[in-house]
Picture 1: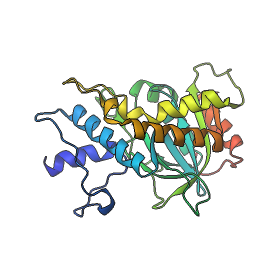
Picture 2: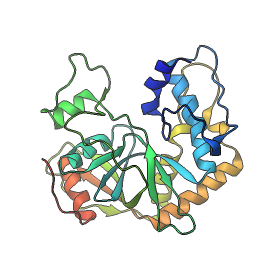
Picture 3: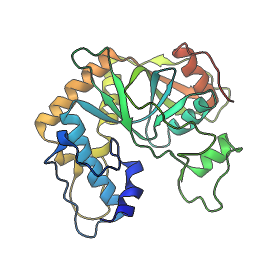
Length: 268
């Protein structure tokens, strides 16, 4: 593929950067792409193989937006349309920085480490124009935005800057509710539900359907790797409490700041 093609794909691939040098600890890994694969299938196939590579190294590729402030990271979980990006935008208004826009790479504790760490993720920060107009009408949109708009690099959005791992301090499954009166404190999920939420988030890159062909991406994960992922997810649910919160994006941002005991500050 051409260099320009890869440049368009890179923001949607977790843990991948443009470099002329091969990565020594990933040598020998090959992702075979069908001839003529479209842009969507190409990304889905590469990401499925990246899931396997990260997992083999003890890193979970989670469907989550990661935000950071003062050296502390928070994961925002939820399915498509739950409001992860809208909540992240509201937190950005309080000085939080977006580390990963859709898929977050979370390192599991290693000997000598103090806990879980966010080590990267996808740099694209895609939002739905309708949701953006509703909750943040002051942010400009292109004349013809299409189904999604990538806000990465937008002046009003603090992009990711930390070059190293960022310790995880909280994880919240968010649900943007259109009723501004629906103000509720975050609730701690029970152990079984938390494991289920982390499990679904950790299989995101395998649960995509190709536009063409009959390959089921989930079958690329061998049974030993699936068992390894389950062990990592169970340990994560045990060591990193998962909360759930509902409200408008700004209410959710306030709840998350209260949960993390982080004082409000920065540009509004």
